[in-house]
Every structure is written in C-alpha cells, then in structure tokens.
Image (cartoon, rainbow, N blue to C red):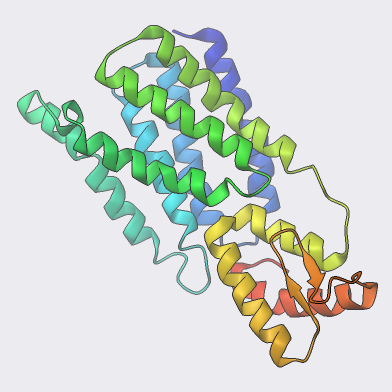
Length: 253
C-alpha cells in the first residue's frame, strides 16, 4: 500500500469538488461524473496496485471524450457513446479473465488507449489547465508502461503525478483573471470546455460579430480589434452579450 500516495490522490477531492461547484449548472456535469469515477479508480489503484490501474486509464479517456459531447441538448445522450467506448476499452480485461492473455501485451491496443487519453492532453493543452493535463497524461503513460512491465518506481511516479494534476490545473486556473467582462467569460468557457469547443465557438462568435457590423473579433486570449487598437469597455460589453448568447447551450453565461 502506497500510503502517502493514497493521501495525495485523496486530496485531489478538493479541486474535484471545486470543479463540481463551478460547473454545477453547465453541460459538463456528465463529464465530471466520469472524471469522478476516474478519480475513484486512481485512488483504488494507489491502495491496491491491481488490475484497476488499467481501469483508471480507461476512465480518464472516457472523461476526456465526454467533454466532446458537453452541449445541450444532447449532453446526456452522448453518454451512450462514452459507455460504448468504456466497454471497448475493457475488452483486454475480459480477454485476460477468459484466456489469460490480452491485447495489452502487444503495441496496437496500448497505442489505441494512448490516443484516447491524448484527447484530454490536446484538448486542454492550450488552456490554463494545460499543466494539469500534461501531468495526468504522463501519469497515464507511466501506468501503461508498468502494466506491460511491472515496475514499482513507475507505478509510484504515476500515482504522484495523477495526484498533483488536479492541483496544478486548479492553481493555473487562478492565473490571468483580470480583463474585460467578455474576456473573463471567454476564458471561463475556453478553460472548461477545451480547445475543440473553444475553436468552434470562436468561429461562430467572429461570424456573428461580422454580421452585426462589429469591428472586433475573438482571439484565443480574448477580444481584440481588427485594426489592432485598444478594446473599449463598450466593446467588451457588446462582446459579452454576443458571447453569452452563444454559450447558453453549454450552460455558461
């Protein structure tokens, strides 16, 4: 039993609860439910170092994919896709139980699991949660490596990184809170929903702004004038009104 590793992963309940509170009215509640299951699996992994190490990896991938369907209506229905993915990811465990061997012994299946988990890293890497996503991705890579070739040091390092990743994400989310009201709403959305939803929303915002005759656009870091001049408070107010209308389906205003 990795006692202080259990304590470290257990302490991640604090940022997890903060995420639940901050997103309780958004479409991310289903993704957070999968993230909570992943946290429980990592906690069990720290306590037992059993086959549950693989389940924790599968659930991380499921939580990342759940974010891709976090839009109303349809957020609840997207769970059928995530459940199907989870069932597919559990195939190697069924193989091992039935025949004593599994696809995890090769390289194709670990690559498939790695690509699934990479959704989490790539989606959140350009956001303020990026450092936490990187730590979690490395933790998953170490766990996958030690599943193929058991190594206590790799296992402990993976547990440590998994335990600190929510704290890293939470700490970095507190950085850069200043700015106009449109910029603040945009950062709230971007950091919660990640790069893929962020890029799509930017395209919609900029198209709507052009149609409305505004001379500003939404960049990755916030609102900006097309001619490079300073953004006024009036522009921020107009931008926020437009952005709030677009983020209603995500439960964020």
